[in-house]
Image (cartoon, rainbow, N blue to C red; front, side):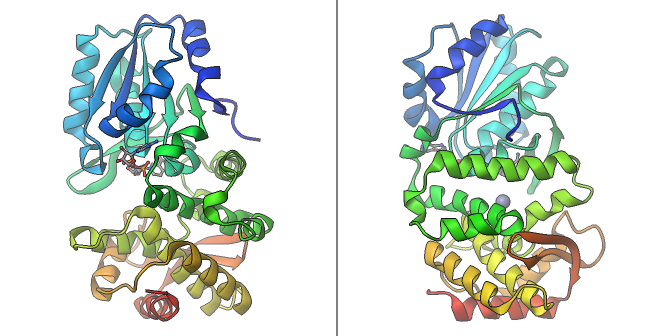
Length: 346
Ligand SMILES: NC(=O)c1ccc[n+]([C@@H]2O[C@H](COP(=O)([O-])OP(=O)(O)OC[C@H]3O[C@@H](n4cnc5c(N)ncnc54)[C@H](O)[C@@H]3O)[C@@H](O)[C@H]2O)c1
Ligand SMILES: [Zn+2]
């Protein structure tokens, strides 16, 4: 079951109804330039209520206090009150920032998230994490709060650049690897691009929400959602100041191969399963070798999820069965990066 406040359906079937029944004093949309150009027209044809628009620049670099301030000030200009609602139409940046702004404006007004990237539909839409970046630290200021509604319309994916779509697909693979072996077998039978997105997204949301329900504040089980992220995030950070950046999902794809290697090293994941995971991820992503191992290690230590001095990660006992908080040494990370470089196509 997916949570009641999340619906996967055509936007035209839902939005006007929700706004009308909520009897809101004011309505505003938060968009970035791309979602204004690509997504807003699909929606505006079906709107039969009055609204304002706030359009911000796209990209992670705008998920900050400065932009939040601009949005708060717009809400004041629009004379928003406690009975007003903000509708966030965009990827994870818009949904995280818009949700944060709405939840802090007048101590919290209603907001709806309409995620328009695959990543935000399968990941950011679930779990109530909202926030912004500050001083180069990702999501360092934020809160937990569920949106009043999340509406997922997979038609929005039609305009998403393929590299963004594929990046979101890494989280789909992750959800299968940590919780559902048979789904991992299923997705291998089809070209990833030909996926039935409604079906795939429904599956990912079920997995993530089931995990989040058991551990909403990430004291334990929720950490399995970070599979592939200890090494993946360190790779992503390392390449931020290089000429060839990795998208989040691309770095996580490499991280999942490395962390599967480590799982096998600990005699948990079987050899044939490691091979299967490596081959599948490489076939989808087709990425190049990684360099800068020292920097990657340094960044793995700085991961804010590492409470102790040591590096901790998730490992797979089997496909579909994941453990968290496993301490690992630098040397095994290096070995896993060597393994990835040996196996990758680039
Ligand atoms: N809250 C959570 O639990 C959670 C989970 C995962 C990630 N996140 C956050 O999500 C963010 C990343 O999300 P993202 O990958 O969606 O990034 P994003 O919001 O930056 O979107 C990626 C790009 O696609 C464009 N775009 C969005 N929808 C489009 C569409 N339908 N057609 C054409 N272009 C479109 C955007 O303008 C942007 O340029 C990060 O800030 C991350 O921290 C949050
Ligand atoms: Zn991720």
